Length: 368
Image 1 (cartoon, rainbow, N blue to C red):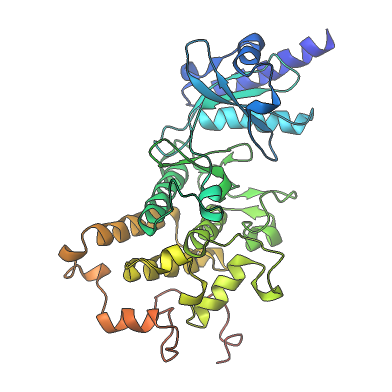
Image 2 (cartoon, rainbow, N blue to C red):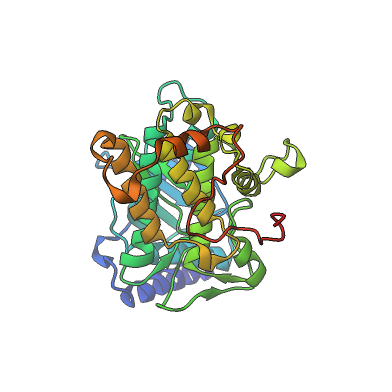
């Protein structure tokens, strides 16, 4: 009786929160426990797709033949239940082609269950850090994925009915569908934020290596905190390195810091992934590296907004796809000698950071 009462309260809380939003409530189906147990063979361990801080994800098949991903909380904790309910509320407000779709939920069990569309090709993290002969991650595909993720985050920040901060942007939360298009997932810690407000918390959440240093120090999460995390993903795509690598030398363990220093020293070529370095798209790679550098500024005010990032990445893709037609396009043309100079690691006469943006470190720290 106590458990039934608890489940009823959970369901009631969810319904109350949904009714107070402008989301697609009618599109959120309620599944029964029996349906989801049957779909996952009683949550058999061999159906597990992945595990994370928010729960375990199982692959399942519904009675109508649809393949789905079912997320089950790990811990019987009131805060985790609220995170799951929060994820449902957030996802009912979202409709974007590069954001994973929530199909429904179940609150009849001890822990809530969320049912998503199944994204078949794993995570971006796997393709960056594990060799995959079936689908090598070319520079063109990396740039497309970066653009798709930026588009999704820009939508969350600027186009959703209420601005939404993801709060855990990382390559393992970016899934690839059957056509290897990016799908942003895992909204358990996301928050809808009133315009002109920030989310203040005493409990800093996020993944080590991706967390905005400014947020870590102040406890204040802003849209620019998502920008910082996205900057780390851009650097992963450029370098093929993990955000934190404890086996590396001390100065290279934190990818963001190592990347920033390499940019400061005009040493981009030495840290690029071989699959990126072998590409002939030197102009585009330099552009993306500069953009990543701006995203990783210690000052949130100096970082671009996601809507600007999305537009810039689209412009870079346009340059790549139409290079022969873009020589006269003022905003994206390059001087041939400038590209050669940036690409040649031996050249130290000019800084790679020839942008209108302030450098990440103070002039004193750069020896001037």
